[in-house]
Length: 326
Image (tube, rainbow, N blue to C red; front, side):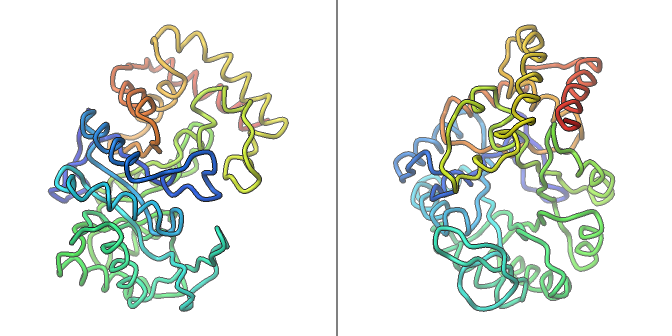
C-alpha cells in the first residue's frame, strides 16, 4: 500500500480508500444484505491490506452504512481514518429538495444549524467522538459559504472533526471555500469514461488539496465485461446506466475486447488496468473504491504493481474516447 498526506494536515491516508456507499444497501444496492459481522470482516481485511481510509455518508442507506460501520468500528476505531459527509439529510427541516429514496425525502441544507445536526447524528451512528475528515456532500449556493465554513471551523476547533473537504463541486467552489478556512481535499467523480473534472487538478495543486476520485470504475461498469450480462432491480443505480443500453453496451464490450491483450501483458484484471490509468492522471490522487468483498480489495491493491508505459496510457485513453463518442 502507498500512503499520502491529506492536504496540508498531519493525517496520513492510504492511497486506496474504502468506499462504503454499497454498505448502505437499500434499493440502490439491492443485490446484497449488509450486517455488522460482514462489515467487521471487511474492516479486518482492509487493515490487513493496509487500507486505513474509510468513506461513508449519512444518506448511504438512510443511516445504515454509518450504523453498521459504527458497530463494526467499536473495537477498531484507532486503526482507521474515518470520513463522512454533511449537507444532505432526511429530517424534513427545510433546505433544497435533492431526491426521494427508500421512502425518505432527502434535502440539501448548508445552514450552520443543519451542519451541526448532521455531524452530531453521524457521531452517534458511528459510535465515535470525532470524525477525521468531513466532506460537504453537495455544494449549495442558497446559503453563504462563509456561514457553512464558519460552522465547520467551529466543529474543528471543538475537536469533533479534524479536516474539511468538499464534493460534487468545481474549481471556483474550492477557491471560495478556501477564503474562509483550509479545505484539505475534494471528492469528485472521475473515470476513464468521464474525465471532465480533470480541470480541477490545477486548483487542487494551488491549495495542496487531495483529489479523491469516486466512481473510477463507473459503478462497476469498468470492472470487467461480466457486469453487462447481469440484471438489476429497477431502483438499483446500475440499472440506469447508459452502458446497460445500446449503443453504449456494445461499445463498452468492444473496448474490453481491445484491452484484453494489455491485461494479459500485465497479468492483471480490467479493473486494475483502468485504475492504474487513473492513478497516472494526477500526482495527489486518492482512489476511492467501493468494497463489499475481500477479493475486490485484494485486486484493487494490485494496482501498485502495474507500471503502464506512456504509450499504454495513451492507448487506453483512445479506446475510452471511442466509447464516449458512440
